[in-house]
Length: 166
Image (cartoon, rainbow, N blue to C red; front, top):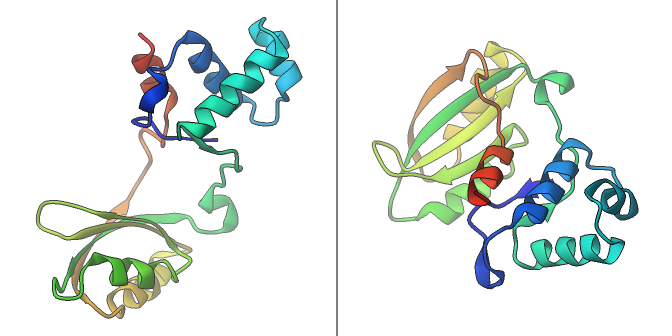
């Protein structure tokens, strides 16, 4: 499940039931509405209404499976900072980067670079191939790469959801 933390919107802040529902779906994404209602001790219609509201407000944006790139053979994770030509803008570069399967995320950033990419590769040698594909994108002027040695805190949303409901 994908949760957007700042998408509180017109419906107000999350409450403890919203947080409990999100926590349950994060732990067990395949749990059904009926089972969720039983575990949360609320009516099935309440759970469905909460899910609908959370989706409409953009808080929950998806229910897809979390996939580990390493399990697919992509054991190297790296972060690539790009400097781009300002004349063309960020969007054309992002569109080109989106065609590279190993590019998992691209963010426009402040600081010494213009864009930050999270990428994966099978090996360090394969990372060179991915970087070559990135820098060959029209509009990319320069890159700097940092290889991740270990993930100390994986991507997570539950602590933020819990903090919002306090």
